[in-house]
Length: 183
Image: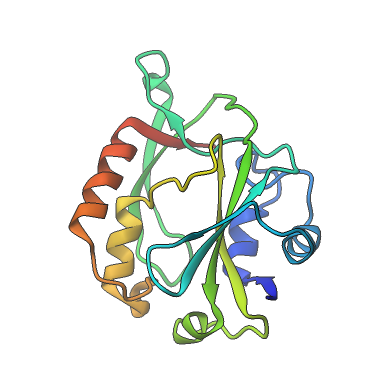
């Protein structure tokens, strides 16, 4: 199975001077590692075209989701942001001014070549990296509710076209009510 980084993932996972991106690893080294080192586990993603490869973290990348507590709630920030020029801005929140622990796992989010072609991204490999979760446990972090909504809106709005699953959305909202990303 061959794996490549999509331009979308490359721009989000390897932003220079952002501490909440993949550290101590170039995009080329990351891609090579995924092709050469088998994952510890392969999990099914939210749709048949999505797989999650669980790797032990070989970098100094820190956990992305942090529990919200009374002691850190004052560090929460929010704004409307778009992931690319083609997407509509949505409300996001994050912590500023904290130092999360180093992640034990990198969970790489892969889409099939066929799905990426539907979304306008041509790749020659079997699978394309569209994202990565940095976690303390070898388990998937729930997709953010707004990402589920964007996916349900369809490819033309930056999503995948997968309909909204109310139960998965409720589980996601419960998790993200108690956690936030950091910058």
